Length: 78
Image 1 (cartoon, rainbow, N blue to C red):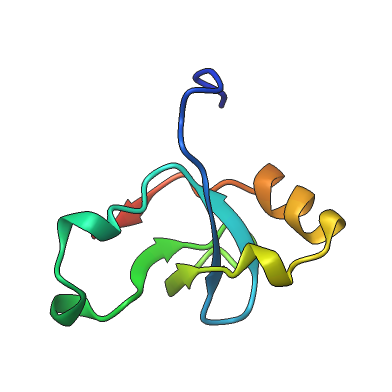
Image 2: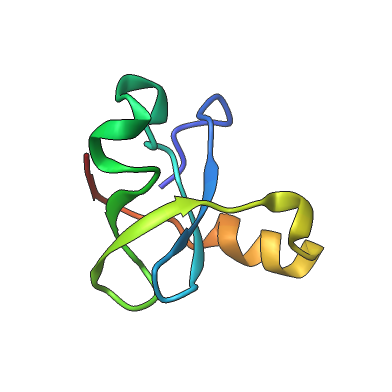
């Protein structure tokens, strides 16, 4: 999976509340008004396409953060 440590990982939370990470979360490419704050990402935990938003990492425990970084989404739709 790893393409080196250069990639920027974003910890996100899906609509079901699952935490995972993605390397592709192009928030800056779209105005916030277009689709709202979320993106459709296939959650690796529930396997469904879910609206996902960046998680507030300051509210996560170290184990939650570590788990989210290990659970990486393989695909997303803008």
